Amino acid sequence: MRSIKAIFGKHARDLIKNPMSLVMFLTFPGVAFFMTLFVAGNNEDMPANMFVTMMAAIFAGMGLINAVSDAIAEDIERKSLRFMVLAGVKPHQYLLGTGGFYIFAGALTSVVFALIGDFTAQEKIAFLVIMVAGVTASVLLGATIGMCAKNRQASTALAMPVAVVVGFVPMIAGFNETVERFAGVLYTQQINVIVEDFSAGLLGPLLVIAGNVAVLFVLFVVAYARKGAKG
Image 1 (tube, rainbow, N blue to C red):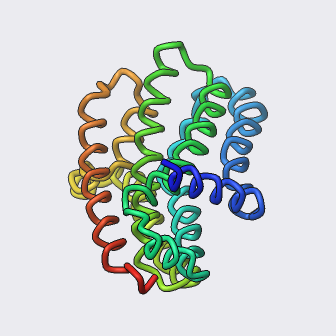
Image 2: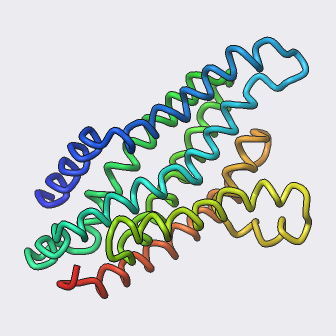
């Protein structure tokens, strides 16, 4: 538990010191707020929550991947990961410390989105549940990418195309049935399903996201084990 708290605190301090990553948690809800206030609010033909759900889905599905992969790649670049491995820090401890912080930060941002949106109490609950689930999957994906990278530059090169694919495939799926069948296995598609239609059941999307989380967790553990003292 001490190791997890130390890693959690380390990443909290690193985020505060890194304006580029910190801005990401403010930009998405900020854009949603202003676009809702000045665009959707003045257009009766536009859904009131259009920009909230759009920016929230992008944040949960794409935004966190780069931030988490960069944070872990920085640990690798500075040899911090090597020190932690040699000190006996287990994969789940490192993941709970690092991922736990970003999931916590992502959950707080999700609450801001929920407050901006014009949701009923039931819709807020569904929104927050699917957002936290999506944030968890993105954090795991970013962590796995960061663990596979040699440094921050390589991490960015790997994370950017992956984030674009998982983020934009669901958008393309709305216009192509073949892509839609493939997109159904992605957690980002399930986020879109719920935020665009709160009448859709939560169970199916959550099961798909849980499958994504399980696979990504295994991949992270394998990557952590391979990195080992070489990190």
